[in-house]
Image (cartoon, rainbow, N blue to C red; front, side, top):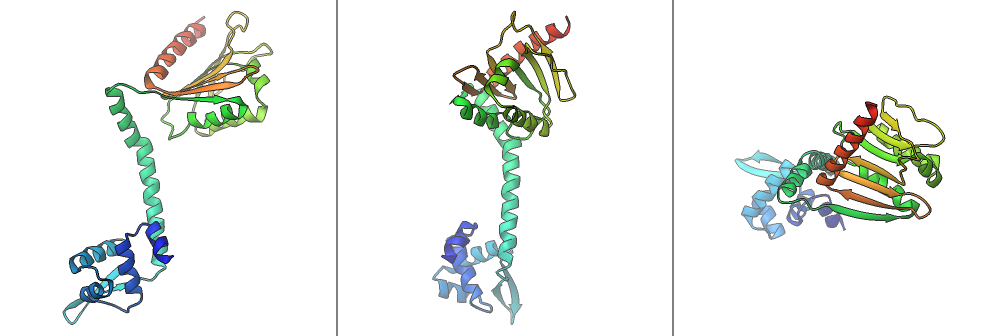
Amino acid sequence: MIEKYLEDAGLSDKEVKIYLQLIQMEKASVVDLANKTKIKRPTVYTILDSLAKKGLVSQIDEDKKTRYFAESPDKLNLFVERKEQSLKELKERFVNDIIPQIKSLQRESGEKPIVKFFSGKEGIVSAHDNVFYGKPDGSPTYIIYSKDLVDESFKNEETNKYRNTRIELGIKAKTIYNWSKGVKESDEMAERIKVDEKKYPFFTDITIYKDRVRINILGKKLSGIYIESKDLAETLKSLFNLAFDNLKNK
């Protein structure tokens, strides 16, 4: 059981054998460890070097001979914490650097969009999490929606949760909307333009952010589509800005 937990923490099976053997001995030479564990001496040297880098094994020189001893088991906690921090840094690097590089390679060879479908209110609410993942890069989000239909379809706490997530991440919005009951003024986090719901009715709630497009079909039968496609997102952003700029200049 101990062996399994040590392996789960990131040690190889041979590292576990050497470490646990040293724990039971005050100190030992490479020959001693090879005899006890039945691991070949060249491999024992490699394992000891690896364990030393992990802070779990140290060495001393006695009578012109090198002997090794295990550090306190408490050092395992430090090893796990360092590994956890390393994984956190690796995750951040993947999100901010590696994944975008891989996506750029995919784009060069022909983009392959990711498409997901959602049905019902719960499906649409869960789809919100797909839009604003990853570290914000200063890009705004573009929103087209009917406030009348959104208010009919969702509770205030549901729409506020989505809006608060965006604001907490510091993501600003450009919005074109319908609303028969009033006007939503622009603020520091959103620039809003209202259009006549009779002349230009909207029946969906569309959000465009980075390479992601989320389209909610509103009404009695709620459903949604989520698409990751740089080509589609950039095209929709251009269409949005074309309409937004013309409306703003009127």
